[in-house]
Image 1 (cartoon, rainbow, N blue to C red):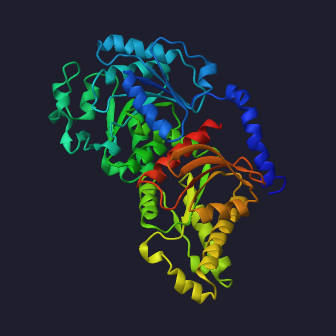
Image 2 (cartoon, rainbow, N blue to C red):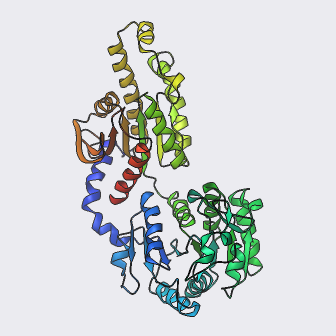
Amino acid sequence: MRGWTPRAKRSLWKQKSNGLKHRRKEQMARAVIIADDLTGANVTGALLRKNGYRFATFRHGVPVGPEVLADYDAVAVSTDSRGIGAGAAYDRVKRTAQAFVLPEGCFYQKRIDSTLRGNIGAETDGLLDALGGEAVALVCAAYPDVDKLVAGGYLLIEGNLLERTGVSRDPKCPVTLSSVQAILEKQTRYPVGTVGMDIVSRGAEAIRGEAEALIRQGVRIISFDAVAGEDITAIAQAGTALGCPFITVDPGPLTLACLNAEKKQRTRKRVLMAIGSVVPIVRQQAAAFEAFFKTELVQADVLALLDENRRDAEKQRIFRALDACAQHSDFVGFMTARAEEDVLDLRETAARFGCDVETLSERIGAAIAELAAAYLEAHSREIQALYTSGGDITLGVCEALESAGICVLDEIEPFTMYGELIGGPYSGLPIVTKGGLAGRVDTLRSAMSYLQIKLAEKE
């Protein structure tokens, strides 16, 4: 790309911190979350923060000006209204919403309790009335990560109907129904509709079509079934494509998915991962990471990378697989052994290539490092950080990127550190490195969540 070099890109890393305050004044929070209690606001905040969004919670009545909103991707205000009368809750939510003026492309969340306690209908009305016009409420009470699902319109908690759980005996806000639509209809002035799993399971386009049909019928509050994270992602994709103002009414996952849907239209902050360790714990860590972030690491054929006649074809195969992964994930990466059968017999392989084991290890490390460096150079606009596993790989990557070393900034866990490259065309590029044998099963997942937060802080 003419006029754009890795060195020029790295100079922008230096400019980022210098221009941070100025740029933040031009930005605005992309979501304002109105919760009925402080704990609920913080639960959503933790979810967003874990996914790399800058977030803050404010007490009810505390003035929050534009200069504060500019420092965060999302802010939450607790109205402390779960246990008060419906009329008072309506007024409190409406006044809170009217205190914010969000630009186009931003949205409000009415954060609700995951067991539907409180004045969810009245508070949804208050937020809709504050917005006025044609705004609609997208309701998704599901939280699959904690086994709270909505199927057939009913909220199920660990497989039990909501009304058959302890929430039915809550001393302040008992819930004696399981139908989300029925609960809403008892509390709201607006027509309510439901989009069931028969539609949700067909994806975003089907969901959008059904939602638009309900809106044409005058429905202002739409409840959605969802039994998995992919269902919520599809609902968010449909909602953000409706073409009319909307609010999310949920315990957190739908709001996160809507932020992510809008984020995909912006420059992605991708992490390039090069994993050379082949011990079992590394494979377990990779599997846990893939499951959590819903992505997949690419298997690199080490023998092909070492073979001059097959090397170029293998590089192109890996690059195509990484590019495909980049279409839906902020993480792109490859590893040398996804399964036990992928682990090379080093003595046998060394004999095949006419060298000793130490020389073979160096050649493997260099091949993996060169692969990472080549992909980084080709995607220098998008790649904002690196992850390496294994000392040989980390050393090889530093050499391939002409880096003198790593400025260590933090220890995420024992033997897992965060820092920045020193020197070379990628000086200042964030990097997380981990010892091959180090860590627990969830260490990689935790380290990448940590890295997302660090990248968000650099904005």
